[in-house]
Structures are given as structure tokens and as C-alpha cells.
Length: 253
Image 1 (tube, rainbow, N blue to C red):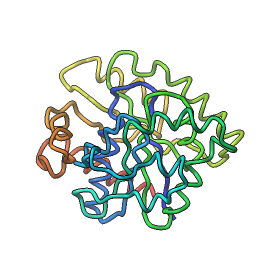
Image 2: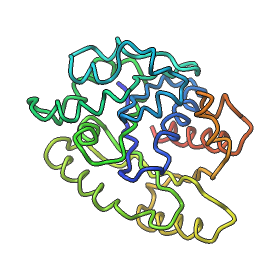
Image 3: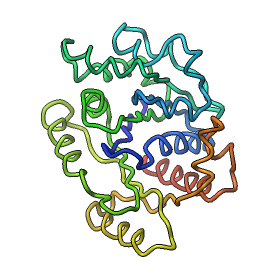
């Protein structure tokens, strides 16, 4: 049965979708079967894998609200072994529609039961908020992967996320834990980046991965080409970093 990992941070622009896309692609290179569930109405993970949202007949919204099996909406990515459950702006409506549904916090957990035996890892790319979609991700996940950018106020707001995690763990998902913390957008030229890494390591201890994702132009360019970094520029610093992170994740178990 696959490990379900929610990639989460309620702050926007910290590298959630970048990590979902490129970590999945790098694990695919290692021979792992990976599903990326795009759970953000912006659909960045979907377009980052080159999936044309305008041509989709169905997306995650249909699985959440119309009982469509997730296996029927999953599409192939450009990377062998990696698949995508795509999202479009329709998903924004699900947050409202789920309010009146029985056990509304657990809908994604039930949806994922359809595919849990088919993959080694299922990554849920969460929206930058702590709304009902994110709560569904917390309930469905075995663990959380938290990207934190190496910038001022990096830890700001994480207290609320960790409170939400503890609440869900106590009431709805006792097994929920932190899989790991990954530092993103690291700029070796600045003292600030190094200070933030030290601060996060002091806060989270051994949960912080050794691999640090650098600020890298190629990582920013790749989504506009609909390709993960290992296909867009496999020799770039970003590609090398995500390959190293994938090895750490695979060794994690």
C-alpha cells in the first residue's frame, strides 16, 4: 500500500507544487510508481506536468463531488512511473459543496482508497490555505512534507499549520505525522538563507532533510514548458538537488 504524503504549507510561493512535481519525477527515475494528486484549484502541478487543463474531461473535482473513481481521471505524465490526478479551477467549488456532505473531512481519504495499492507514493499538492480541502488532505495523509522557503518570516504561520495537524491527529487521523521538512529557494550568497536553515533545523530537528533546494532559474522555467526539471534540464542545480532529495525520501521508507 502506498505512502500518502501531503505536501503542505499554508503560505503561498514556498515551492509546494515545484516539490510535488520534481520530487515525484525524481522518484519515478528511481523506479518508484508515484501519483501526484493536484488538490489546488490553481492546478499548478497539473500544468507543470504538461497536462492541458482545457482538454480534460474530468478532474479531481469529479472524484470528490460526483463519486467518479480516481483511477478514471488519472493521466500519464511525461515521466515513466509518474501519474497525475489533475485539477482545474472547478475544484474551488468543491470546498463549498463539501460543507453539506456527511463526513466531509474524510472525502479524499475515501477517494484515495481506489488507488492506494497501485503506487509506492501518493503526493497530495495542497492549496495555500487551511480550508476544507487542506483538512481533507490532513485526514487522508499518512504524513506531511513541509516545504519552507529560505526567506525572512519562513516560520511565520507554521504554528497554525502544526495546530491544525495536532487537531486532526487527535480527532480524525491518529497516525498523522511529519514525514519531513525541505528547505527551498536557498541562496548560498546570503547570510539570511543560512540563518533560516539553522533556525528551521533548531525548530524541527531531525525532520529536516539534508538536501536543500537552491534558488534556480531552470526550476522556474520548467513549468512553462510543461516538464519537470529532470526532463527540462537534468544537469541543472535544481535537478541534481531534487534527485538527491528523492534518494533521501526513498531511504526514509
